[in-house]
Image (cartoon, rainbow, N blue to C red):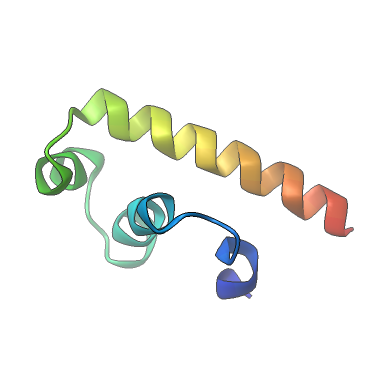
Length: 60
């Protein structure tokens, strides 16, 4: 089901979610891996989750 929901996401966005939620990395650790700030990762995460929330509402 996770793959179905994230199917339409760009690889960059998908990687952020996978690292945080499936691999258990913190936002700070993901930021370091991607050479960006923790705040940027947090903003991306919120944006992606908002998009996914809207997508899943359309599927209901």
